[in-house]
Image 1 (cartoon, rainbow, N blue to C red):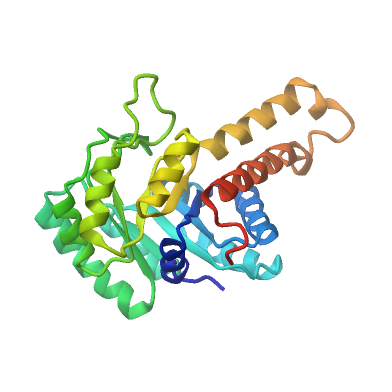
Image 2: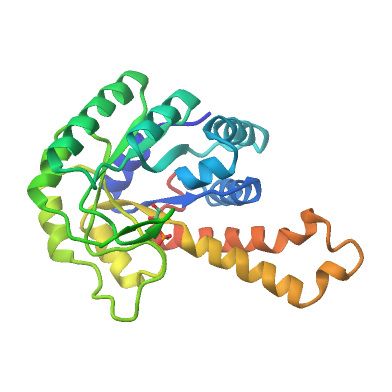
Length: 287
Ligand code: 13P
């Protein structure tokens, strides 16, 4: 069974650790993340971008696959299936398809429109028992072809959106998706501190979890971050392991070309990345 992310994030915020959101792209990815969460007794959030949803043929396929996998792998730790950076229409489609959590990213709208649309989706999610993440201040880098600047969110706007009754709030604090450039200035803890002061118990979300130094991750958690999103790092470790397998000519040995063998090193590499992140975020044993 899938659960809303509310309870796991409320506990994380109170317990000063963070739950990882790991984005999924296919069956192997999903299986690796679920098995690792179970092994480490950690709650977990599976993120699905709109592009990944389309790639996997649609949100209904994703919801059906994840629900069946949780059951057939006997996963007992809390698992939320969450739309990542959803549009207004995408959020509605995922609610319909059986996701247990959504993100509505209205950060590119003027704040009044972001508030109006978020408010409408909060009411629907409340009625259905789903969790909802909102975003204020765009997160930089490229995701599904959308490039954001990585601005810092305005703490008063964060409070206005938090007060709508969202479950969790993503606020830009200089973080970006993908690899960080060499001249990256780091996270703005001053902004994070000001946002947490205005939003109190609201679990804050840190996007762009790939490549943030460990000390910054720990400091962000100490300042109220209770959910951290990781995507690129799993993609890189999957690609690297697959390349090594092929470069070593293993696909040409025996039945090494069988996709179940070819994709196995990548699937193992994702497990290792997820384990490392869960240990760093402090969610191990918290399920
Ligand atoms: P990374 O790709 O930088 O890990 O960011 C993931 C993310 O924030 C998904 O929303």
